[in-house]
Image (cartoon, rainbow over all chains, first blue to last red; front, side, top):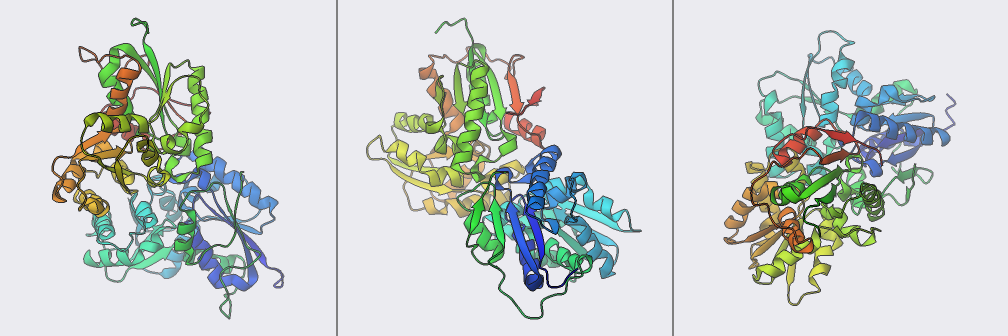
Length: 271
Length: 271
């Protein structure tokens, strides 16, 4: 790959949680990349939709990205990665959240007891379990945590209430000698402090947490021969494009929370 | 209206919370009514969508109901009632959640300090405030409670966590001498015991709670000259129709929770 040409990366999610993936990628490879982000707010959240609908919505976005001549597509949504990725027709490389997270686990050489937390759709799809079947001896314990997304969207991720909700969901992991937790939802990195605190109370002191953004960032390094930036760069560049398919009164607030800064120009489109 | 002809009532919501409205109506007027219910699961939840989108989705459903020759349409969704009802083109009577709730307040002859709780869309729309402007001297205090819907959908409405979430939202009502609370969301009647308990701890002992289902049921009595059934009847009749515009793995579980019984045949349609 010609090192003088910037790699154009298309990233999509049903909402704005995928901005955590954009943030990780832009923080690492900013000087060699440009981005298109699409939040499919018209169909948010994918987790409440059927597999057929999620495939249809994802395909439309992929077709849009291909017209925009992206070099690679990132499905920054665990629900879509779990139930749609294998069904999408796409003639550029397309990467979901699952393989990068699984590869991070394999590389970490920790023990083989893995905890996975995600939305109902992701957990019930068993997509992570299937991905681990290609490797020997991993045992997967998974718990769906449907209230984590609304608690993050409410901005309550560091409250006592968030702690109690997390304790109620994660209590099932108490007697299992886990050492790795996959955060199988792009909202969950916002809850990391609360999760660490709850896991400590459950007796898990040295857990290795894998989040989709960091896992994809590592994965792209080998996949695209990308090297991390030597010097820090501004996270937003003028030639990045941000699209949404519907508005809601709070999308700007949420975008700012996931990104840590305002997005100056978001374009509303219909696919 | 000919008393021998059953009144055909079309009810819609973005999801299944509107089944609490169906339940109230069917429990009261079962012998003189038939129902079409539509849950627009393809666009659930309306609360996260723009006003333009909510109007578009609502209009499609209204057109569908009119083709099905309903006599009256109930918008059993506070978000749609708040931001779309006045924009919908409809040549049969159409009733939202707001006027019936406001009429219940007026008739109750309680004091004039009203608390309203609902989703962000409903509360931010100020639609209830505008409805009370037609009457003198009402003072409205409103609080949006975005976590109430997910907590009900998780089945945690009677837990300590639900109590704490409710206390956090409702704390603002502590120093106000309210006597009426409008539950401006069709999910909230499921939380009634928790809400009563929290309000008691805040010093409110004799609150009058208005829920959309009961308010619409009273309102229809005068609007359609309907009399309550003399003898109890089965809530589901064979000629009722239930439609959804998408599936999700848990819609059956949720339908059962709102209705207290399974719906034997739900038809998936595209509008």
